Length: 219
Image (spheres, rainbow, N blue to C red):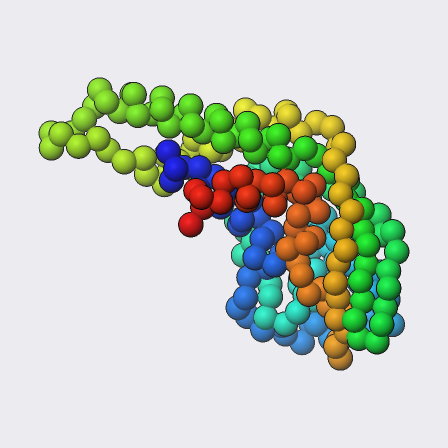
């Protein structure tokens, strides 16, 4: 059961735009040079968030520090179907900014769905699903007397079914969260230094709450 919940939290939360809004790997290529040199820090944040909403990973990656990319995160994200679309259906408002030399801070208000309630319901339903799976499996114990494990494919199906069952909970965009986003300026323009803050905004603050609540279950 802990394994299923860990997969749920890692697959739905950690892999979805986590690891600093990208994963370390391929260095930024020549396309990074196309960032508008005259952009302010506010414009850079706005361009990044608009690209995220539009699933434009190439443009969004230009606003991250070199060595980060979004392609893998979005590939993993797409498997969640309707949840994928809900996560990207956030609104944002730039509230103000402060620039000092090559450092800047931009305050952003995110408005999105109540993902905390959604994920809590998913965890509850996953526990019930595992218990049901186990009870059904008791009647088909192998000749060696061992109960078969819940494999990755079965876990993925359970989670997909739970997502489809509960997606209706994400109907009202009533969660607001204000965040400060830090940037640094290099030869290519303003770059976001802490993508995980933006990720938490996209989740309406649910990310940190869920990670703390289930930290003992996630490796």
